[in-house]
Length: 529
Image (cartoon, rainbow, N blue to C red; front, top):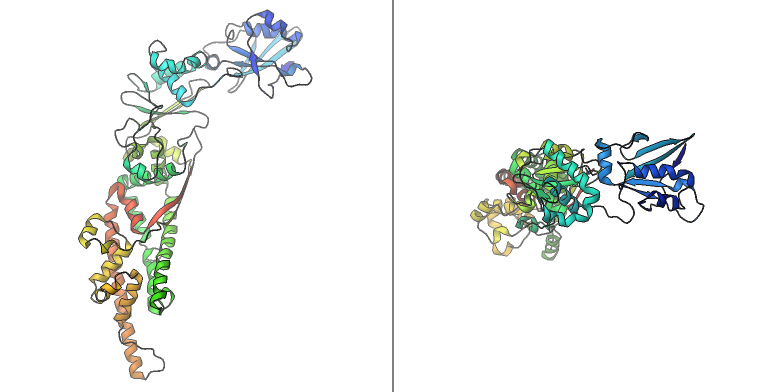
């Protein structure tokens, strides 16, 4: 058997218009002439194939010849709409077609693949949208405006586009005229811009009366082309969807945060209260200057932020439900463009550019409460990672400029403000909230209240028994005050978090803000379609 293999450096540029052109081509061995002539004249292939006959400098060898079949004809051959002549032995493969023919004792063989030859451009994503739109609307004569955009591609790819159109008619409930939309820009919501997102490309590529279609090419297309700020904005959008559609999941997060063994209560008790009781750590006896420096470092708050960040990290990393909201936002653009926007997609189509028949057309879901099974399945094959950090802002001070009532109505405050509020309402704590102490760190204020709760205590160990007994009673008194104070404080925090759970799309953001935590890194990878 004599066979040609694909040339390493492609140069498909030989389009013979006559038998004589083939005979005069010095790059084609004479014994191959008849096979190439018969191939070029086959009714199914005539004017639809292009040969590669050039090679790099070196020996002239017959194994440099190869052939490509125009994409439209390729699709018809793959679908069985047309057939290569019976004199050829044809073996159809998914990515190539092997064509043999016997002449005398020799069998000549060549492998063909789809393509338009060297120097020809393949349609871009937007041009595929136009090709499919023109085909769906009935062809070039029915959609002249859109056809002007892809006229140069219609000869090679119009056939596949028509195949896709017929598939849509047979396999979907699409009705009405289709409009190519992806080349425009959409209006971003204020929230999206506030989260740092700026890419205005619509998720909708084409639309009919009831379907906004996101178009993806089979073979690796992805939901998100942009990264960085767009990924972070998508994360915030997904948080809103979870808050709106799944309050139970938000409650799970608050339960994790307020877990007495691992959560916020333990972090506070193991740190702040431990330092208060021992008089060590950041609450040891300090000069005013040293205390001020300690306040600026915000060590206690930073440690709580770090510990909470790790806790919240775990919630998101293991949460498949949140991953579904993230993928749905990435595919639909619901939070990005807003409900009712033409830019928001509610359908997804993955088209087959090889045959035009192995396509996918699925619902995305119209709202966070109706995410489709297809998107949930795709989400399960993606990888999602997020980490958190302190917002970097000093969270203290809200109650210094707002009344308690205003804060309770807006929930625009944080766990340190609640600590100060609890001190204000405490008989002992309120006594140390003087103008002179106004700018003190909340934990420093708590230290002062602790000192006041055990007023009269002196250093002991060398004192007489009467003084030692008095000291013991005062310390017990201080412990009791601390215990009761922390119960009141944590009860307030719990009450606030319960209210935040009911805030719908703002719930998760409110909870993170309450603890002074923001996402520091969001990463997303997907298998592609």
